Image 1 (cartoon, helix red, strand yellow):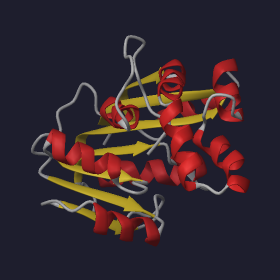
Image 2: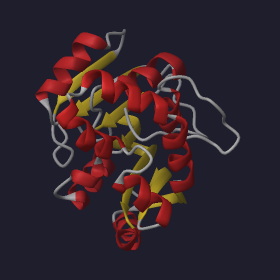
Image 3: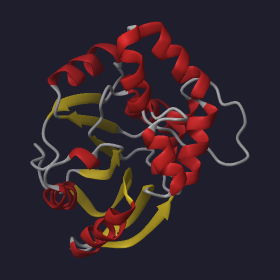
Length: 225
């Protein structure tokens, strides 16, 4: 589902556990039980489904630009009060003040207009709502990213560099990822898929280890009016 997250003391996590942990990290410190939750950029839906079934929000909505992803989510992850819709991160198809909590996990680095995305988050999030964000950037993009948050009305927020936690997750999940690639990807495609998956030895993994790439999480517990 994503590059994953583990703490230093975590050993031998179960299959997909590291990816689930990144979602749990995105809401760490807040309770979403009985709340309305939106994931922007939900991908194939597994992360949102995990939060919905374990953290008990009253309603969960996943949004993704890909119609194929949404069709997959709707067929694979069905649960009461869980829905998936097609839509763009910079033009959300929701009314103002619609959600108690919004998360965005490993998706924003491909958005063409990041500032428009932040404005839309602010618009559809209820006053005093929670926004959890996790994604990677090149090191020279770290300061501008934080500046975008500061300039778009986010308050009471904390920013953490979780690069080491993500790198540890990639180490822990290496065998699972390699086995999946060998099983499902044709030989000619295994090398580029390994690069995409961030397995140890890939460019992403090397850049994360050297500090050229940083993985950041932001948690905002309240937005300015």
